[in-house]
Amino acid sequence: MKSLALSVSLFAATACGGMHAGPSIATADAPYDLLITNGRVIDGTGAAWFVGDVAVRGDRIVRVVPAGLLRGAKTTRTIDATGLAVTPGFIDIQGQSYDNFLTGDGRVISKVTQGITTEILGEGTTPAPLTPTMYGWMFSDSAGLRLAPRFTGPHGFGNWLDAMGSHGVSPNVGSFLGAETVRMYAKGKAQGPASPAELDTMRAVTRRAMEDGSFGVGSALIYPPGAYASTDELIEIARAMAPYGGLYITHMRSEGDRLIEGVAEAIRIGRDGGVPVEIYHLKAAGQRNWSKAARMVAMIDSARRAGQDVSADMYPYTAGMTSLASCTPPWASADGKLLSNLADAAIRARVKSELLGGVRDAESLCELATPHGVMVTGFRDSTLKKFEGWRLDDIAHAMNEDWTDALIDLTLRENARLGGIFFLASDENLRMQLKQPWMKFGTDAEGWDPDSTRGQMTHPRAYGTYAQLLGQLSRDEGLMPLEEVVRKATSAVATRLSIPDRGLLRAGMYADIVIFDPLTVLDRATYAAPHRTAAGIRNVFVNGVEVVRDGVHTGAKPGRIVRGAGASGRRETVDGRRETGARSQ
Image 1 (cartoon, rainbow, N blue to C red):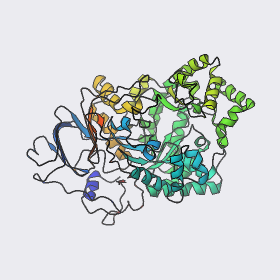
Image 2 (cartoon, helix red, strand yellow):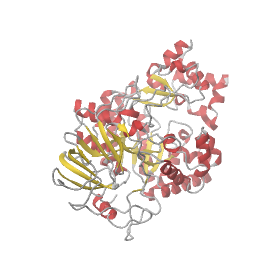
Image 3 (tube, rainbow, N blue to C red):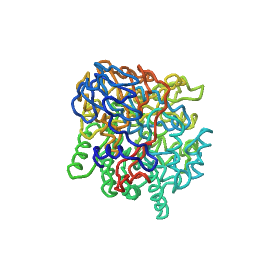
Image 4 (cartoon, helix red, strand yellow):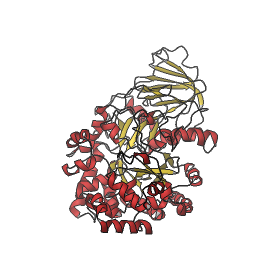
């Protein structure tokens, strides 16, 4: 990645390829659209805060100076931030707001009210590029199915990004290419190794997505059909994206009993594929595996000392959330036949036997968390809604079944659409991991409107990830300085993704800005009552437009698409030199 100083200088020149021209640095008597005065400026570099003023014109920051230097400047609006923190907007490296950005209202209230100004998608599966066979696999609603044909062809991935941008969204949006999508494009939902012809297709799909603006390839190797991919297949995909500055980011094949093997596989894919490695939501899952966390961190440190670019991200909660159906063995979902397989008595018996004996060739989250450590969510069947938020063992007791039968019956009756909150990690490991210098943050959550929850539960991380870090963990526990939390939430992610124009409070950067009260910022969401927006987040700006005022969403949707470094038309500067940083539209 080129230096940020060079990035800023490039934006001051005339933009090419349809990009916005960067502003010249303002003079003291030039009018501003926004002036934030007397705030505790935490610029995203990790440097200590200072009392300063931030001036914005249009969609850019034009001045960041010690307080008072802009006294008397002409401005449309002034915010007195005395006693408040002023920071870059937070970049969520693991967002899940696919439906909201494409067919929903695009506001993702639970995200922006905690300070998120950019959300990055792409864990495992993306709804593009598609073949016609994939339409029904990716979309179950009529709105999505109407859009699906646009996401076929050589630029299906880019068309999907464009569709989200034109739909209207509050935060900026970018994405990795889902490795599961790559496999389905070439091989459907079948098990088995990819043929040479299928590998050629996977490479081509990957290259085209990188040219369309993907940040790299994101795998999720516990979920079928992504779980069917071999290490060698993933290495070939990595090699295809390497010339475009791609990043391999992974929900590893195991976070539990084969955690160490999962880390080793991720490191090997990066090494042999010639790309950096990022590990999603790093954790040691299941109490019997908690002792492996120190070795897991040591493996990453060792790889880094040896010169390999490996790092990770996480959310500050001991529970994760995913599909309840993920508890079933991956083979049961082969060829998209999970429901018909579970309805077969002989296959049902085999699934139960593996669940009770431990699924040895895959990750069984229900077994790792224990049935009491699984909170079931997302009921649609009116006769089952009473179980919303119940633990799996309690539901089984109420149904007069053992937990394996309850799991299978619930999956069948709800068409495999139920979610589960899985209590898997330890508080001690969580705090140890958060302090690692290479750690970053992501929610692993979709955005919600708290007024339109339809009675469904969700994980509190959807509302409170960054408030938890800023409030309880930094202020109350002193786990990390506030400046370090902000760095890991902003510039560390921008650097990881080669986004040169976001993640810092600096002249020339896009005006993604958060103003919060460091004394009152708080995660108010809980597992029992998750739909509570964060406290203490006063104002949030995206591209210079206010999306949160006094903690309330303004309705604005100024978000733009952020594309990766390898995007076609974005790798040449105005003077013809190679450009390696991502650009935003």
